[in-house]
Structures are given as C-alpha cells and as structure tokens.
Image (cartoon, rainbow, N blue to C red; front, side, top):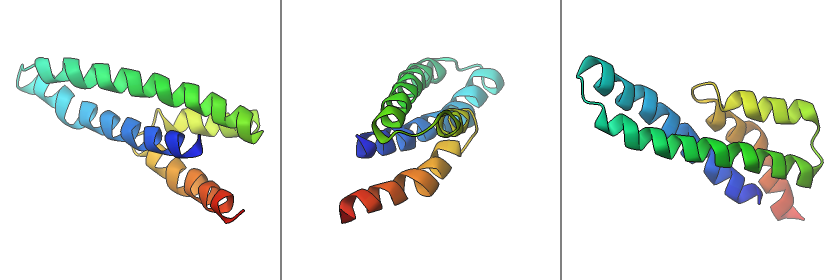
Length: 99
C-alpha cells in the first residue's frame, strides 16, 4: 500500500504543478481553457485518491493525526507531496523492504 501511496503522491504533485504551471496560465493569459479542464479532472481525481490513501496508510501504519495533517497539508503546497515522498514514504519503504 505504501508503494501505491508513494506513486499517487508523485502523480498528484505533478498534476498540481501542471495545473498551476500550464493550465491556469493558458486559461487566464492565453484564453485557452480546454487544457485546464482535463488537467483539473486528473488533479481532482489524484487529490481525492491521495487523501483516501493517506487515511488508509495512516491507519495501516498506526500513524497519528499529526502525521495525517502533515500528509494532508503537503497536498495543498506546491512540491509538498514530493517532500513527503522523500522524507517520510521512501525511508518507510526502505525499512519495510529490509524486514
């Protein structure tokens, strides 16, 4: 489950950056709203998947509410999910693979 969450975190972060780095400028500066629609749908789905998986992983790993808050807030900050993946998820996966 941790690998799936890690992948979702990376994809959610990429979709967030695409939305704000490409979709929004095209919509508001170039008056081309179409890419924003598709990027927005993808980001919305990935965001919901990220939050649901964060809940599942926190329950599975017995992480506290503080850890869930870190995971959730990271999804709202640009590059936040990349930070969470590197700081929390990758080390946890390394620990699990060593057992």
